[in-house]
Amino acid sequence: MGLEEKLPGGILLTSIEKLANWSRKSSMWPATFGLACCAIEMMTTGGPRYDWARFGMERFSATPRQADLMIVAGRVSQKMAPVVRQIYDQMPDPKWVISMGVCASSGGMFNNYAIVQGVDHIIPVDMYLPGCPPRPEMLLDAVLKVHHKVMNEPLNAKRAKQLAEKGKELYVEMPSSVRYNRKKRKEWIAAAQEGREKQYMIEQPNAQKALAAKQSSSTEVTRRS
Image (tube, rainbow, N blue to C red; front, side, top):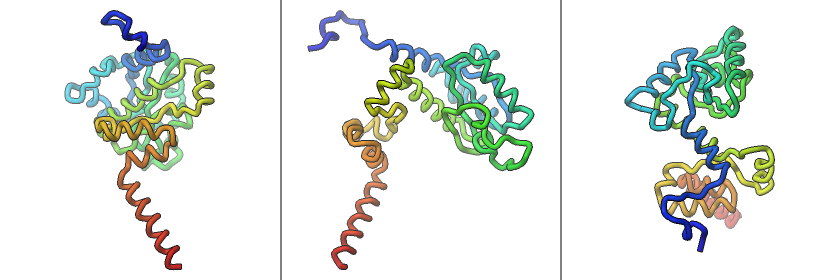
């Protein structure tokens, strides 16, 4: 028996934390901001074929004061670095950053004095997206991972401390290969009590087989010796 069973239909129960995070996740507005060729892929993602309007992200904010998400799409030059930082500082909290492409993440092929070797030297980054350039599907995957992070963020420092004391990992996402397999999903949730390594073995069955083969071979060598 639970409280939900005594309530009339059409009423949902949740927490303030979940409601606030759901609202942030469902109305995340990216800043209109592109630096190089990765910006073309970012614009393609906003088009009708990939259509991230279904995530409430169709409005690219023309002002950083109304933006929640900065997608650093392309290489960051030393001249552009102060501008990137200024735009980030003008965005209201809470805000998130995706480093799109290898040039934004590590400087890429531009290993010289004119290019910042990783945008994380200037601003904090929530999600690194590899590729040169990454395809729109990869950007969508990065956005969904940021959504997962937003949904599991603690509401304040006190709540974060409580979760840390419980030993809860906030940003571990269930892979789609597990989420849509009922049996694997139950095993993955149950494995959370045993630690991340057990969950990884469920996510990667080939790794589990390789580990089992390695253990059996080492056992065989021990017997022979």
